[in-house]
View 1 (cartoon, one colour):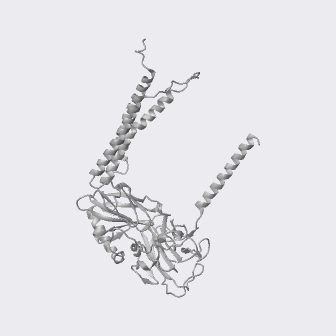
View 2 (cartoon, rainbow over the protein chains, first blue to last red):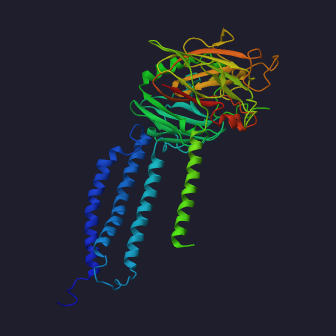
View 3 (tube, rainbow over the protein chains, first blue to last red):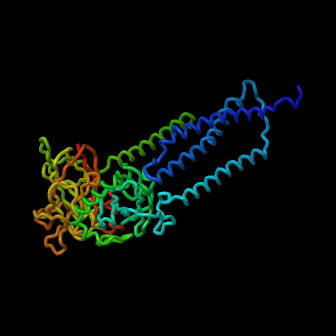
Length: 284
Length: 221
C-alpha cells in the first residue's frame, strides 16, 4: 500500500466528526423548529410577540448546529483520543491550519452579519416597531387609528389611563383585540419597567419621561404584566394579569370604568404625557 | 501542628463560619412583626373586625420618628405589627384610627375608595371620595382590588398626638370605617400609597420600604 492511497488519520477523524455533526444537526434543527418552536416565548398574541417568537426560533435553529458541533467534537475526542492502557507517549503535535481558521472566521462572521442585516430589516419594516419603548419621539409610528393607553408606574403598582375615553384611570389593563395600541409609559417616582410578557412589550417607565411603544393585538387573550426594574421592597409584587378582549367588551368595560371614575376624575387633572407631582418628598 | 490537627482546625473553622452565616440568614428571614389574628365570628359568611391605628411617629425602638401602623389584637391591646390574619371568604369590618396629618397622594387615583362593600365613612359620615391632598395614608391590597384613602388630621387640630405611640382616643384623630370581603386563602401584601416617609426621596423610603411599618401582609386562611 502506497503512502498516497493511505488515508491520513486526521482526515478520517474530521470526516467522521462531520458526518456525526451533520446528522445530529439535521435532527436537532428539526426538533428545535417543529417541536420546541411552537412553545417559544413570548407567544403569538400580538404582531410584535410573534416577530420575537420567530426571531427566537431562528436564533435557536442557528445556534443548534454550533452547539452540536462542540458537543460532537467533545464526545468524539473523549471516546477516540483517550489514552490507551500502556500508552505513555505524547499525542501527535498540533499544528495550525489557515484553511480551518478561514472557514471558522468566514462562517461565524457570515452568521453574525446575516443576523445584523436580518434584524435591522425586520425592525425597519415592522409597522409598529419591535415592542420596546422608543422614547418620546418614536422612529416607527404605525398609520391608522390607535388606542392610546398611558402606563403609570409607581411604588408599587401600575395604573393605566385612557385619554381617548375621558381620561379615566384604571388599576387593570384592558385592550381591544385586532387594534394598534399606543402605550405611553411613564413613572411618578423611581424607574420601573413595564413588561407585558405575552404582548412582547418591555418599556422603561422613567419619571418625567414619555416612553412610547406600539403593539398590534390579535384575538382575545390574557397576558402577564411585571415590573422588570428593581424598584423597592414590593418590586416582586408588581405583577398582574392584563386582558385583550373583543372590541365590544372593551367599549363596555371602558364605559363602566368611566362611570365608576367620575368622582375622582376632577382630581386626576388633565392628561399629560408625563407627570411631576407633589409632594416629591414629605416635609418634616 | 500535625497534618490531621490542621485539617480538623480548618473543618472546625469552616463549620463555625457556615453556622454564623446560617444563623444570620435564618434570623434575617424570620425577622419581622408577629401575626395578629383578627377576632372572628364564625358563620356561613364569617365576619371579622380589624382595628388599625396610624401614627406619625412610633416614638420608640430603632426608628422613633418613623410613621407606622398599629393593630388591635383580640385582647384589645395595640400591637406594633403589619401582619394580620383574616378568615377566607369572609366579611371584614375595618376601623382605622388615624392620628397623622395629611401628606397628599402622589397619584390622585387612590383618593377614590375601591373594592369595598358599602360606603367608606369618616367620623361616621359617608365620604364617597377623598380630596387627594387631604390623604394621610391609604390601606391598599392591590391583589384584592382594595384601596381606601385615610383622611389626615388637620394641622390646626388641638390635642395632636405627639408622644410615644399608640395614641389615646382623646387625642385628635380621624376614624375611618369600611368593609371588604376576603376571597380565597392566600397571603396578600398591603401597602400605603401616600408618600408619607418623612425626609425620604419621593417619600417612599424608610418606613415605606421596611417591613412592619407602612406595609405588610394579610394572611387569609
